[in-house]
Picture 1 (cartoon, rainbow, N blue to C red):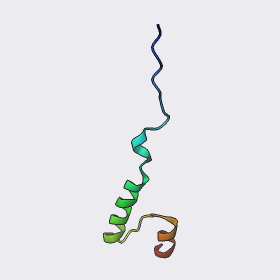
Picture 2 (picture 1 turned 90 degrees about the horizontal axis):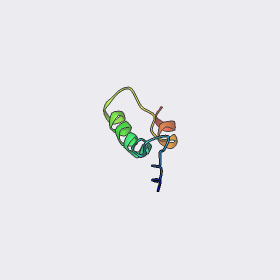
Picture 3 (picture 1 turned 30 degrees about the vertical axis):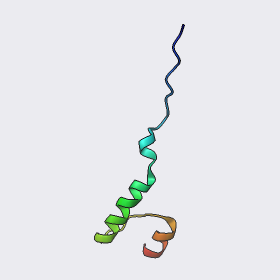
Length: 47
């Protein structure tokens, strides 16, 4: 019998974790003069 196909996804599951990028962006914004866009609400006040 044939074996089932492995399921392939167009992008890896690890790249979808936007909250990790958000955490880094907030850390950068705390210390750096160059600000990074975080969320629509946060960035509209700061930037």
